[in-house]
Image (cartoon, rainbow, N blue to C red; front, side):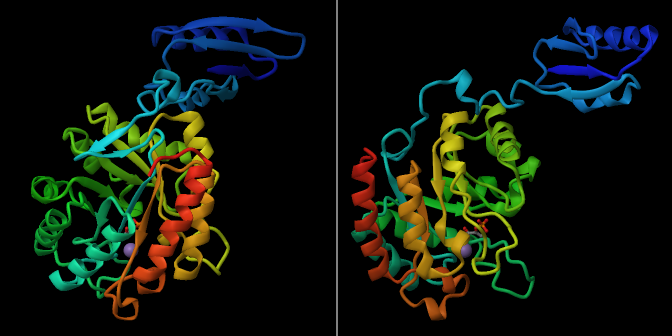
Length: 337
Ligand code: PEP
Ligand code: MN
């Protein structure tokens, strides 16, 4: 990190600051110019709260030059991470499509949708059993019964399952039925949950919070990885902006940024970004062209009757043509289906 000192700081104040920094185990390289005095502070500052230095009167500016995340960082792991979910690969040159309803509603509903998405080429079945609804009066999900159905239908169609977990006390329950834990946008900074998921070895699909920076998202992934679980899949699902014509704004720039800064796979959720079904295909194609490792898409055979997110759910036929078009783009960017 670099520390810039205020002009005319007294020697005594500078000495106090230096003693403090050295006491934390860092080395200091002084650089004194005509008008500025800066320190280069050498050492591992990942666990050091650099903002604390502003408590010293002589400090004008502190700049971090090293990223605070390590396990997520491509600098410390050059190779792309490839996650294997019962033989389905996510990351590297693989393109993986996950699809299914927003919420599990019944065995019949899930079975119909699973059959369609499997036929079209989805490799993983999604479905919410514990739903993070904005209103406490909205459908909250089928709970364990929903997980049991996911497991049953997943087995029938040979599709691994991804489902959202909201509470660390549900981890043991989810372990029985689910192949990938989904952490939703609203829980991206539920650090107690992230730490406990880090103690398991099941993959975690970590959605970006709708008001979180990319660095905060990486730090949440770091929470999981620092506990030992290396199987983290990042998922961009749109962020809040001032634009009302979409539910969220898909931040497509996350894709090349994740690829540059991290070795983890990145999946795009165009459904929650768009909020309306007729934008989903364009966002999907753009995302794959930009280098995403896959998609997670909401599909419903009767979207007008869906218990949640019907507006953004694709009918099976539309999903089928989306997959075909995405395949064309995938070939152009050297991704395997
Ligand atoms: C979902 O996947 O159904 C969901 C609630 O997603 P998000 O956390 O992105 O809102
Ligand atoms: Mn949804």
